[in-house]
Image 1 (cartoon, helix red, strand yellow):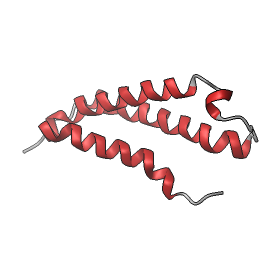
Image 2 (cartoon, rainbow, N blue to C red):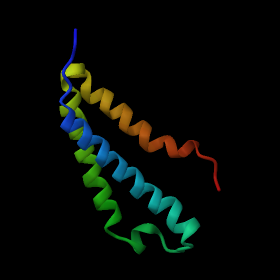
Image 3 (cartoon, helix red, strand yellow):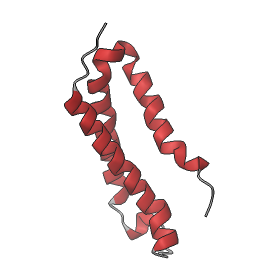
Image 4 (cartoon, rainbow, N blue to C red):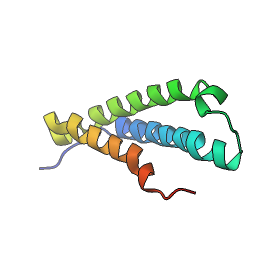
Length: 96
């Protein structure tokens, strides 16, 4: 059986996921190690966390809508596992 995945929502989900991961990279790797900013990233740029939260919610909802034809009721579980995996992948990068 061929599933029709609604691709504009998948594209929106990927774009917002890339934004979240780039904000995470900016706050945890670029600011302390490359730009040598000694302040915590939430004090240096207080809008970073709310923007990352909003784009994470957008990504979550877009992936659920886009993948619903393929996975049905299992879609929220699949999306939660994938998003948590993409966020926690940073734990496996060795410390610089």
